[in-house]
Amino acid sequence: MRRIIWERIEGFLFPQESDTWLTVLRLGAALQVILYCSTTRAEWHETFSMQSVGPIRRDLSEAVLSAQSHFIPRMGWLVDAGARIGLGEGLVLEIIWWALLIAGISLLVGLFCRASAIVAAFLHLCAVKSSGALSYGVDIFTIVGLFYVAVAPLPDSFSLDRHFRQLKPKYAELNGFFRRALQVHVCLIYFFSGIAKCAGVGWWNGESIWRAVIRPPFNMISPSILIHWKFFFPIASISVCILETAYPIFIWPRRTRVIWLCSVVAMHIGIAAFLGMYLFALIMIILNLAAFGPPFRWRQDAGVNVVAEQGIA
Image 1 (cartoon, one colour):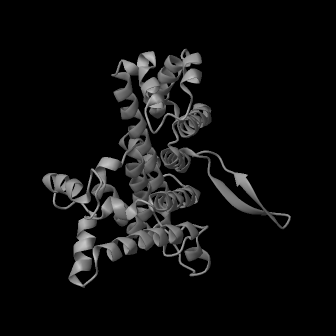
Image 2 (cartoon, one colour; image 1 turned 180 degrees about the vertical axis):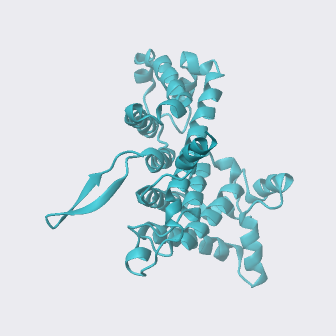
Image 3 (cartoon, one colour; image 1 turned 90 degrees about the vertical axis):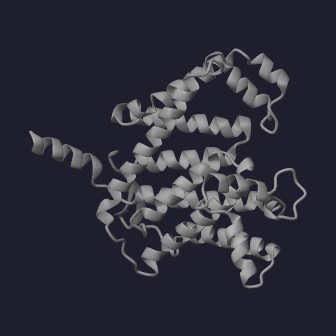
């Protein structure tokens, strides 16, 4: 009996898995980093410079960080390190932005994958923590994606490291374990998010969604249209609560997995369309596809490369 139980536990934790999920996660996380760099370019120096005249400066955010822990990465570390070798703050901030962008591009093409993921995660974390008042969930989930890329068995089959540098992944047999860890992580994220929503009255009567869509800068839809469709808000709110809270229940069985995955992806597409939270929607869709999307493999069919869908693990 113990042997059977252990075999089932081992089978759950270490399933046979291809590295396609890792390719999806690597490409998605890299694209997220590149888009983050492009969207923050105009305000980069103003956000992180000590000379900024904005209402929220880097020194305030980092002072709050220091009260929490002195070991949380921040821009101040890099600026101080640059000052010791004679580099000005503006130049250091410029170097950080370009280093983050190059790490994202390198990760996208699959060149020096692990080093690129680690550099991107560290620099992105420094930027996020030093602008804590301006960051939200998208930044946290981007770091989550980069973390799993950094610790997974790289390089994956579709990276330049595999094809041009002829590198082979170490511990490739652990692909299933790392994907399983990501799956459990995503389930916990949605479950506790759903529980938190269910505890608020605003998510049962539609008030929370109403407040979200009328609050700048998310008010992309005309108020007259919102008032005309006001009956839709309670339905959408309750649907979100059900989707997120029941995510760990319906995402695992094969019969309901595709339905739940498509519903959650559609929910995030709606968030992007109606609230303009494109980066948040993108990283959540990537995490869902990497965790529970159907794996694919390339095969030769009459000399033509086609994608063949495997069974969902």
